Length: 317
Image (cartoon, rainbow, N blue to C red; front, side, top):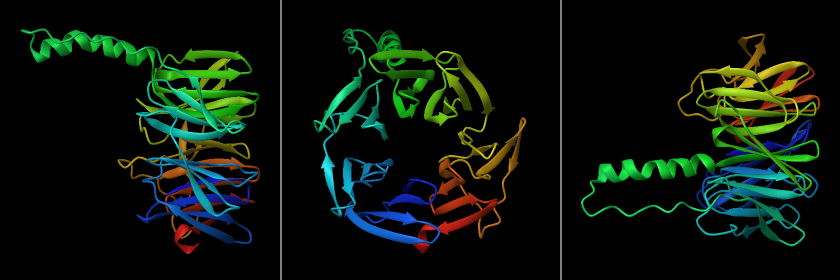
């Protein structure tokens, strides 16, 4: 299951548990109402992104499917080329960003209905053939540096987001790329962390990493990025600021079984107890939207509003 808030009082969930169909739920809270539609199941859902104005949902699984709420059906969207390795699909401004392996990023331009390469990897290295008397070990030792150098120069791209009038792409080895108008800037964080999630907060970019440890940065290209938080527990890489408080969440990590929601007080993590019928487990989303803090796990929606938590279970919809 994947879910994303679309405002203070609404969210969209995609349930991929049925082998024959993806079930998309358009949910409104306070009062609760749900509209569902089913489309072809195209594999496990990696992520989904919503056009809030049109309510269209683009879903990334084994393939991409664009779902129209008005028409009540889905339409296949071909990948930009064969053998792409997609990690994330996100609507950023007017473009759908498809972040892929080898530092490759495509954007779907809806005005012309086609993919445009926004970020390209360098040319593939030429790997010499194995010598007739060369052992497998010697061959690997000789060619590994070539492939390693190429991978480090072209790290995978994992996510895209908007910050002010710029679009950011983040990925492996601490690489951050900013697109603003015709200008392209990039920097590499010294930690070399795997950057997997980002968003705008108070006119600055917040960027989250999950390897080799959890790290959360905040800043700009002009002023640099400050490390706000770090933890050797790699699952604790989600964050949101809400009503002046900094929250930390445990993301999707099958090895982590601890509490999923904390408040960061100084350098200390304090477990948040919602008082609901159950407490959240590993989160899909931790997002502040206006007066509501969303903490969404694979089974339901936790919402903090007016000082109190409520839980809406997916199974009850």
